[in-house]
Image (cartoon, rainbow, N blue to C red; front, side, top):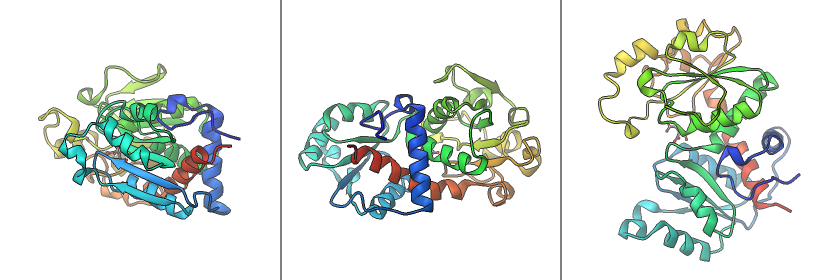
Length: 302
Ligand code: NCD
């Protein structure tokens, strides 16, 4: 099967069979074998925002499939000399990349790049908008554990207002039939959501009650007006995921977090480090296989 899209910009563009195809492919790389299907392929990474784990994950995924990963050094690049994004992409495009992976602080930048690039463009996070590869690896992790997402109750908790991870997950998990709880204090609750069917809670214990999955998010202070969060201690007291609070979720519930974690702010050490509930490192592991599946599916389209 080939994907119905040429780029990975938004989860909105993917069909349920695209999502299932990517998850199955990622799982087969994990369990069966890894082909050298990116041999002689040049994957350019173009990260205008800081990232270590996502970029490294794409780099390792490229290496595992035998491709070459070229890091466009944005910090030392001519973007700092006033070059427009369009000129940067035209320059890069002239080098004939096989894919461009972009992270950008501007909403819609990957979409814009996909209109001028002559290769697949993969959104590795744009502003507060979307982070599709993260949502896909999260779905893979949930399915690996529960077998399916349909009818699972999934709580996405914390700084929803500034989170592209929350947006992509809301769209993806609802496409796969989950019931979504959005749990945030009023000052971190967005005014609108990318899907219509969410239930909102402003209290963590109520929001995670009876849930199969509890996904915690970092407070993205770099995107907030200053003073929105009084103190980390206060936030943890009111909203941090402790073992005690986690009791409210289902007995076999799992905890996810896209990282980077702020320990003892949104999540207690005792939860983050309890590998019987914390699937956070499995997300990291699965991320590599999911990114392999994404790149292979987009680049080696028949
Ligand atoms: C997230 C991101 O950058 O959007 N992290 C990630 O990619 N794993 C979330 C965050 O920065 O908090």
